[in-house]
Amino acid sequence: MKNSVRIMALALLMSVVCWFAIGLVDATQINIVNQCSQTISGCQNNQSGQITSYALGSGASQLIDVGTSWLGGVIWGYPGGSADPTDCNKAKPQADIAEFTINGFSNQDAYDISIVDAYNLPLKIAPTSPVQPSGTTCGSPSCTINNLNSFCQPPNTPTGPPGDGCYIVENTTRPTPETNPFANACPEAISSTTNTTGKVYGCQTGTNYEAVFCP
Image (cartoon, rainbow, N blue to C red):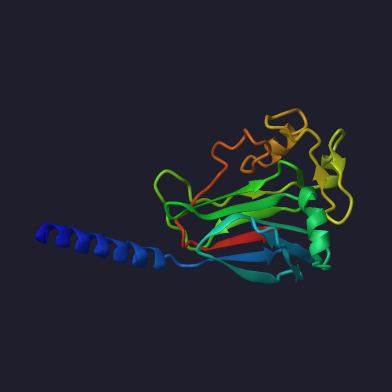
C-alpha cells in the first residue's frame, strides 16, 4: 500500500514538473524587416490559413509573436504597400517563402527558404538568440538573385503583379533544367522537394528570428 502511494505521488510530481517545463518555453518572436530601397508588403499565415499583412517602408520592421507553437508558418512579401490580404494570397505562389515550424518536435524549431514555386525578393532568415540543438544547424540561410528580369529565362516566366517574381515552370519533386539556375543562384534555399539536404535549419524552441527582405 505504501509503495502504491509513493508511486502515485511520484507520478503526480513528474506530471507537475513536465507541466512547468512546458510552461517555461518562451514564446517565439519573428521580426519581419524590410531592408529594400522600396516599400513592400509583408505577409504571414500558418495552418489556420488566415493571412495577416503589413505595409513596410524602407528600413521598417514588424515584430510578430507566434507563441510557443507555430506549425506551417510562412512569411513572404511583394513590392508595394497595399498590404491587402487578397494581394498577399495572389503573391504567395509568385514569391520565395520563409517557412517555419516552431516547436514541431521535442522543443525544436525548423525553418527554411523555399523557391520551389517562384522567386521575387531577396530574403534571409536569421536566428537572433540562437541555441544550437543536437543534430541540426542553427544557421542563417539567404537567397538573393540580382537582375531578375534577365535571370528569368524561358520556359520560366515572369509572374507579373502583385508578386513581380519569376515562376519556376517545372516545380516538380526533383531537380530539373528549369530549377537548376535557381538552385545554383541560391544553394541555401529549397528549389525542389527532394533538394532539401542541408537546407532545413533548426534551433531550440524559444529562439527568436528575423525574416529580412533585401539583406
